[in-house]
Length: 265
Image (cartoon, rainbow, N blue to C red):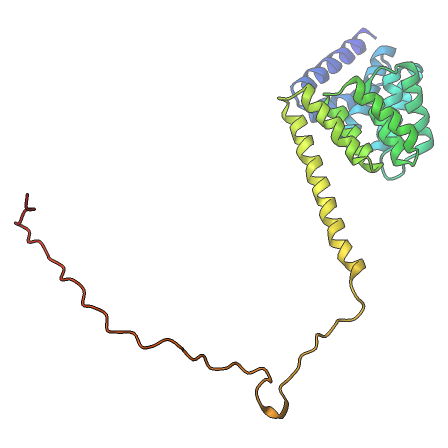
């Protein structure tokens, strides 16, 4: 039994080390080996399930992530973080479950309501499923708690634009630029928002002439001259009334200075 515990501790320690180094593929392989082991402490099994669920979320394999976070909740049913991750997995993927996702989002906020990242995620989700009034309340609250957080602002802007609140989104970003004037991520969000607004205005301008376009073209009248002659309004020849001018006087002779000649003093 002690040898098994030592093996579990060693694999988990190496997985944590690889994760810190950014070698996530190797860390994931070690977690898979750990998940195949049946005898391990409860706290170790819980950590393995959570780490595997997070790995599957990064890979956008939501079906597998749901299974691991649901197992993690059996160890801690009142963990707000686990409820949030499970809600995120349930709201994405080819077969989302909006009802269950909404329940886990709400449970996560009930257990810990002070996290702006969870407020913004839940608000965006509510706007996407058509509960815009409730979703906008969560988005505005998240923007008020963390006005300069790019991760929060990204979800807040997405929800506001989806709810046709472009001007409110611009005000939120303007406040964020005031709070974090030197953050390049906030500036990138600002530029992206203006690009989307300009693009929408151009699309609206392109659609507007089609509604006002006439059904048939209009031909302007053009009078041709009759009998093959010229136009009835003929231009008379210009006749000068002044007398003939005299011969102009010859111009003065231009004196050319030789190279060796100096100006007379």
